[in-house]
Amino acid sequence: MGIKKKYSKPFGDLNSLKTSFFNNNDGMLDMADGMADVLLMQPKRTRCKICGAKLSKPLYHSHRIGYIECTECGHLNSECEDTDDFASKVYVEDDYSKNYSAADKENYIRRRDMIYIPKAEYLRDCLKHEGLQAEDVNILDIGAGCGYFVSAVRQLGMMATGIDVSDSEVKFGNAMTDEPCLTHVGLTDSIGYIEKSSANVLTAIGVLEHLVHLDENIDAIRNNANIKYVFASVPMFSFSSCFEVAFANGYNRHTGGTHTHLFTNESVAKMAERMGFEIAYEWRFGSDINDLYRFLMVSMQKNNNEEFSRYFSDRFVPLMDELQQVLDKSDFSSELHFILKRK
Image (cartoon, rainbow, N blue to C red; front, top):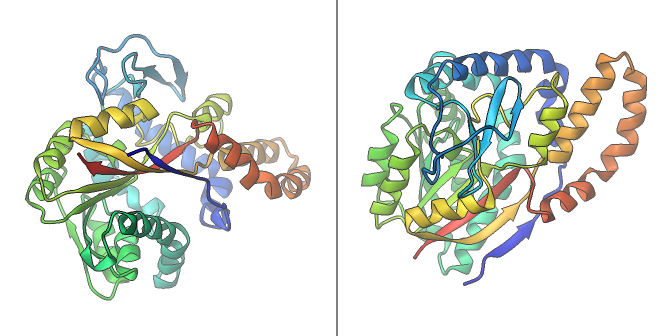
């Protein structure tokens, strides 16, 4: 079966949910720099996170960290390991969730409907093409965070539960929903949950890049025959990575912070192969143009050209969807959603 591909998605009112990226660029950059400080204290990475190939010298440096392109699968690896110590500091001790949690239920539902319902609809429609109706779907969502995606798929009639390492996010998410469906787990507990799950679909929205023990999670998925499909989104080595190199004073939301490695088309395929799955569906809609727009706006405002930044914005924003579609179709954009099917 060939891969069924879909490209792009309108930005819509996305910028209204990312106001801190614009209004608090320096604060967000300080947060990312703090995480970089922790990462730079970790051991040097010698092997590719995906295929285990030996790594050589960095392809480039961004915000003090070197990034190495794997010669075997193209995966982009930071020069330092993401370790249990790193994960504990940036996900648990520092309560990273406080930067993203919605303030109340109205905002929670708005964010869910704007960002996560389209993803849930995509999953539902692809599974329907596979012969699965909504009532046939049982989802385990790993790295569920505040449960936006779990809430979205349940809204569409699918059964779903989620797990996450952040106790504060789990408590917040359960408080926002009518029926609590999130469970707090330890940093390595997801492996046991995956191994024992009766779910036929595993979902990981913006999660795989954060798993310190990715190898063990891949093995757990492969070894649980109940799991027939995997739906995930991952950050990709992309134009956003290039823009972050060029704008050193802009918040590096893509190649930095907790993103210690980025996927490529080849490394996603290699990961699927290791799981015993094949790529069945792809949906590419990145935020590269949004990142470029943000960097330009922040730079102009820092240069005391606030009035001109509005002049630029009025002319650039109407073009963003069309420009992003060009980048998405180049297969070098910042995010990939994909569905894997067990062979």
